[in-house]
Length: 347
Image (cartoon, rainbow, N blue to C red; front, side, top):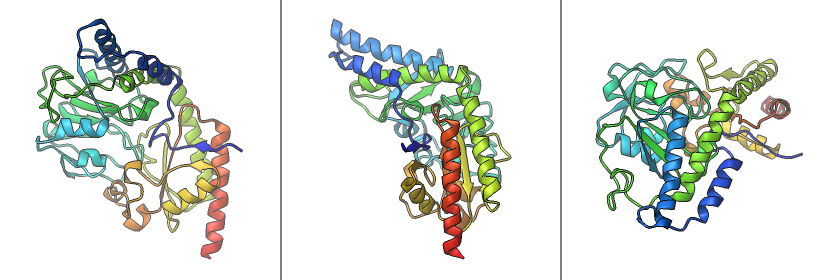
């Protein structure tokens, strides 16, 4: 039986639309900074993608600055600004802020000074969605982009970061989106590309794929794909709850991403679960992919009040647009089978 991929929050498979756009871009030989025809053709691909990303994000009229990913975008947005945030932020954001904002047991963050704060739209581990306050300095919209109906222009944020590979584009491409007129100091200096805010010859092929993926993701959203996915997540949650009464569903009383299920089964290490499910033919994770392999519990779950021991027993299942109900049911059955084996060994 074929393997089932349920780790979309780590990275989504490359969309056919993105692949096609990238292949076409490979035949465009010019440097986008050159003024001849070949250069203008390359520049045209970048500007088309810029428009696609802006439109998908509801950021028409804002500046979309292409970067190597959300990590670089976070540095460009946050470095040297003295911003504050919470421990539930992604490590790429926490590297540049003071993580001192309070978090409650449902994963909600209290922001007292929006102009000096960052707040993620949705958490990659738990799926918990935040209410963004007006005047927020920056929001990590990476996980929500493509899964939630949103508009940067109406979010009240000065800046936002997004990533291509989370919505089916290529890896190694992201963007910082800023309100027009917002000051952003370049961290990579040189030729003055990206409106002087991020120098270096643009990744034309990757950017073209990002734009195509963003456009396709918006079609999924408008077609109700993620509403269906949310129903599958609810089905899986019930299957697990009925068969494993001990399991805790993180953020169950909060609005969550339609595809994300984070669960803690006390006494059964998340890493052990991941390996067992991998052998059973399912790709899942024990938390943020950027933190995998590190011998420490999730800072997000600890910030929500879970003990390090329980946090170490977390498993994240993240569905995708192509995930079927049959695959969800197969995973639930396989997980319960492994849980039964674990209990027997531990008895």
